[in-house]
Image 1 (cartoon, rainbow, N blue to C red):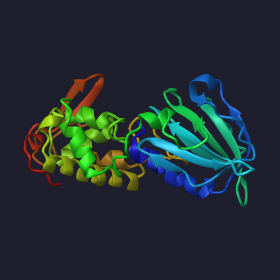
Image 2 (cartoon, rainbow, N blue to C red; image 1 turned 120 degrees about the vertical axis):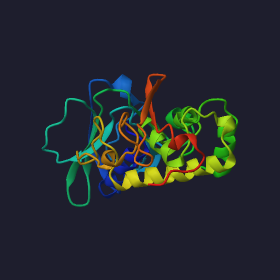
Image 3 (cartoon, rainbow, N blue to C red; image 1 turned 90 degrees about the vertical axis):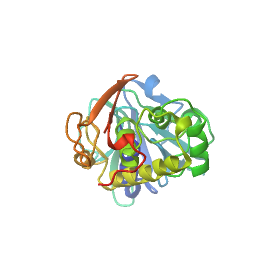
Length: 280
């Protein structure tokens, strides 16, 4: 957490505030060596529309002289960008704050991260280095042939493959369980045994599950809040994640939970033992 839907929710909410906004001043928190990699004083720089790849938020900027720059953010476990009134008190977990001048007012853009697993990184351009160097193609934009070949070449489980941000980016522990349930594929099935049809089904299910989650503002299971400090609603629509012991919505068999590598996997042993995609 946050995963692609949560990052995309924040990105979409920031667009009307950041597009053309100018940095008046900035302030760093108590852990600059952990969070901030090469970020200069950006007073006078202007934001353009923010972008995203997987879980990484991409803030393109321009200096007063027109020089380009990019602020990259990997949100980690609890990272969050928020917009607020400059008079509001800052949270104790705030690590970077910009005072921005928009067309009609001043606002605060703040990055907070209680668990401190996130990272902010500055680049002169969007070249593949740093955070982006270890970020594969976005799961919503990945080419089917690349995805199929990458999956089939691996002896790892399909769940592990989908969680590998170097192969495809954007999926974490919540949505990998939901996607594989939607696709009707067991999480332990090896990539080398995934057929072309199954790979395409996983891609289709990824787009379905993640798009719905974005429309619902993401999943607030632990600490996720959007750019306005509000919780998402997708958690009430989850079909397997966190629902171990409860009946599957399709076949009524109990949802199972399996621990692997410090992470929990949730699945239906009946629906995901068949090739046929379950239908809600």
